Length: 313
Image 1 (cartoon, rainbow, N blue to C red):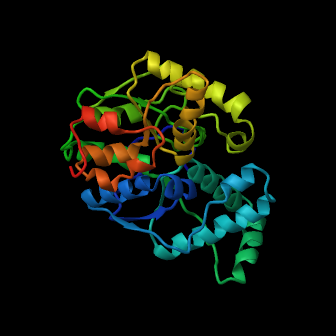
Image 2 (cartoon, helix red, strand yellow):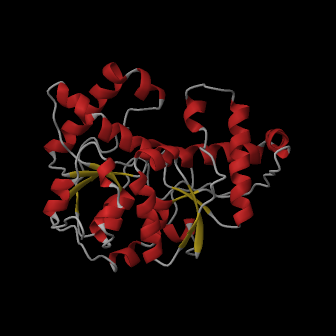
Image 3 (tube, one colour):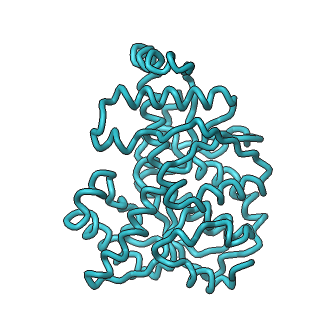
């Protein structure tokens, strides 16, 4: 197993896959379905087939973090989902930092503790599933960066003049090995923005967590999450950020859905928040109707207007 903390994109993904297994995100697919669709559209333009399976379930990370059940249950859920992916014979790609973190951590536990893998297989065996192991978990942001030049060559709606602030989220950069950039001061998202013709903005609190931490988002919004987000948005506004991108639907929920609550307290920021995949798809000419911007709490219309993109384009 690779123990180097930061690796080059062609080390992380030595060969660009012809097809991938796209692991659905419960939050992404329900809250912001345009994210999932944007990924399919991008990869279609890049000649990469996307395979999914309706038998796949949630990664179970939400309830595990909230102590909704014992860890053994999550190991069983992970083993079952990974066995479905193994049957496809394709590399698993996620579009949620939470899914990335939980799948990576729970498969790591089973790989290094055979008794846990046996226990998980005992749970799922009666249902006809068996997890072999030895899989790497990838995030679609890694594939975007690996294919940055190819994406740049397909841009038909350059993001000229658009000031974009990137939000990386915690679960990817917190990994101790095998990631694409330094967790302390990453810049590969900003490189992607530049490849699309946009202007990346290195605002002061760009590395600040979205504040949701699953349970906090449900139980402590007023005293923890909203003051935290106020600080982040204030920093973004002062730096002239016009749009924030995420690579995690959970972060998207926090940054998008909580803005009206801040506005009621007199802190109106009105900064649209979308997934990096939605922005890439927009730049590649995917019709706006396919990108699901209607699911956003904070309207994306002013960004589309600035780019000269209207309905039907």
